[in-house]
Amino acid sequence: GNAPSVTDTIEYVTISTLGNAQDFGNLTQSSYVGAGGCASRTRGIRGGGETPSKQDTIDFVTIASTGNATDFGNLTQGRSQVNAFSNQTRGIFAGGLTPTSQTTTDYITIAQTGNAVDFGDLTIASYGGAAASSSVRGVVFVGYTSGGSTNKIEYFTIATTGNAIDFGDRTVSIYYPATAFNATRALWAGGNGPINTIDFVTTATTGNAQDFGDLTTARVTPAGASSST
Image 1 (cartoon, rainbow, N blue to C red):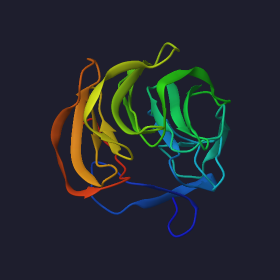
Image 2 (image 1 turned 90 degrees about the horizontal axis):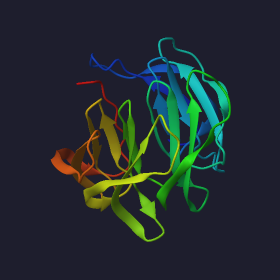
Image 3 (image 1 turned 180 degrees about the vertical axis):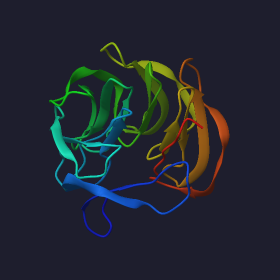
């Protein structure tokens, strides 16, 4: 984060119990502005970001035990504001800013350290969007493009490399939202404006997003996390 200077802080909460965040450890480098985060049940992964130069660093932590992050490898190119998602096997980093918007999509095998490998491309070069996934699909809520914000949603099949495919449209054109998801639904909330809109899609079936409700207040660049519930 960048409050008030670029930091390497990692904190955690136990989702099932209320309470303040606690210190987890530190990243391998201080960074801010849209590093992509993804995870398996065992490892949490961070890729990219700014220091303020664009970074290709990937590092990881073991979620069950606190401690500092360890070097994992590198993205195929340094970039920030990356859309990241995963299943239990693969972590995927789509799009980003280099400083121009990108279609580049990389993947890693979460259980094995090493550099990211080319997966395919988004159909729209973009950054500042958000992503969510089931065990089968990764859904990208496309963010800011050369033509401005968009309402497009694209998806990848995580187990097979290849380019993104059109999923549908969100109810509004937006970038810098938060996401939360479980095995069935993916939600995005807030974004530039700021706005209070929350939309959802069912990840197994393509189609346009539907209105879920509203945040308690309109805000831009929020962050989200979720349990299965």
